[in-house]
Length: 191
Image 1 (cartoon, rainbow, N blue to C red):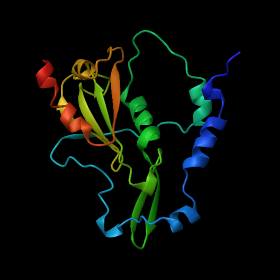
Image 2: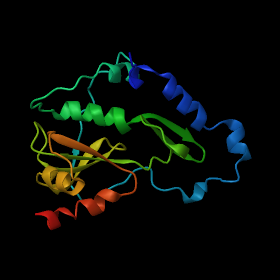
Image 3: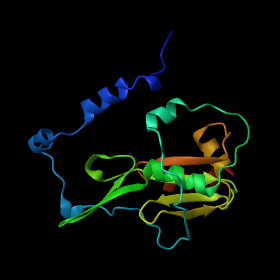
């Protein structure tokens, strides 16, 4: 009987051990961070409307791997409410701790990143949901908001551009290199 990779946590532990930084590895490295040239902690769309997300969701009682192991695929339409979406966004990329030092403030997020620079941006592409109009939204963990980048339902456009079947009510897109800025302009070509 073949065991599921999700149940074999030694894969995750092995990956962690092989890729983590240590005090010695950072001291021996010829690379360094230029603290005076640090990018902003959060991508900000200052001239676009934003929506504050609710913060009153429950704390998890089980570890992430346990929860993933219990995940079951379901068919049918499931409407996600903004409170549940906020919870998903928080545990995917929300701020979990803040450190204030003489040389700056550091925001630790749910998903770690090398150098705590967090190059991943989250975007939500959805149809009308309870508490949220159809649109393309950028998640800002700094003020825990969704900023409306485009109004309207762009899920089909994204599905065509990515050549995937649209089966979900919403899509959360991970953007490591600001690809979404270009992708959002692409749908005009597909309309």
